[in-house]
Image 1: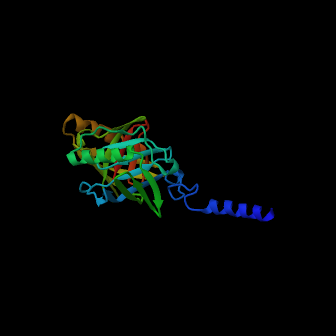
Image 2 (image 1 turned 30 degrees about the vertical axis):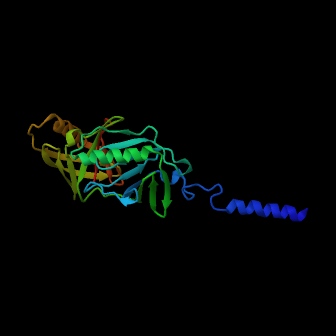
Image 3 (image 1 turned 90 degrees about the vertical axis):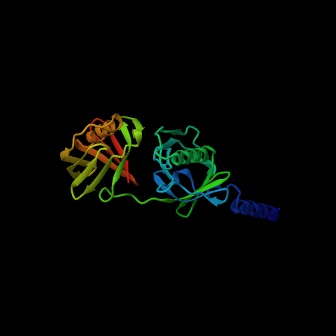
Amino acid sequence: MTNRILLAALVVSLLAVAPGCGARSAGGAQGKDLRGKVFVSTSVTEQGKPRALVEGTSIELNFTDDGRLIARAGCNMLQGPVSLDDGKLSVPDLSSTAMGCPNPDLHKQDEWLSKLLGSGPSWELDGGNLVITGSDAQIVLGTEAPAALEGGTWTVDSLVTGDAVSSVPGAVAATLAFMDGKVNVFTGCNSGSASYKVDGRAITFTSLLHTDKACGPDEMLVEKALLDALNGQVTYKIDRQTLALTNAKGDGVRLRK
């Protein structure tokens, strides 16, 4: 009887450590391992062959701390609550901004990514890389280093009014470039500059001067949002390659490097 008990205990022990018995398909990784992280594609394949992305673009997946996925493929922003249980990535309510992409191939790339994410692909962490695998496509993504405020150019990516976030209309290219206490501003219509000082999570802008020519309605809408975000003291947050500027009213802009 004692031998039978020992044998049964040994079998249970072996089953507990055997590969595939109760293990997660994500190699032991859990959804919480992705929260607060941003991943950028290093390779994309479709039907076993490399899939070329539009020049100058990449696929970015941002897993927010509040349980959402924000995805970009070069034009519109896809987002929705995400479930990462059992090694499956599920975004049943994936929505998209409706910005007109300047290149039709960008629109097709957005649709391709939306279809892949909506198909419930599997995910796993392979070292420091995130691997998303669908029925006929796979994306390998690496973590992205945080950007610095100074150096390089920030381009307005979206406009924020309270809790509402909208894409930049008409592909207006408005930019900021910070360096040595000065910021060069292009509103998509007018250009100018201001002085700035950083104190903790606040930036105080002073002496803002800019040209004052009239432009189209899309340009003027972006200009107003950007200038409002450069008025006096605003809060800022850098999340990887995204910079958020928010004024005292809760409005502002988001920019990307």
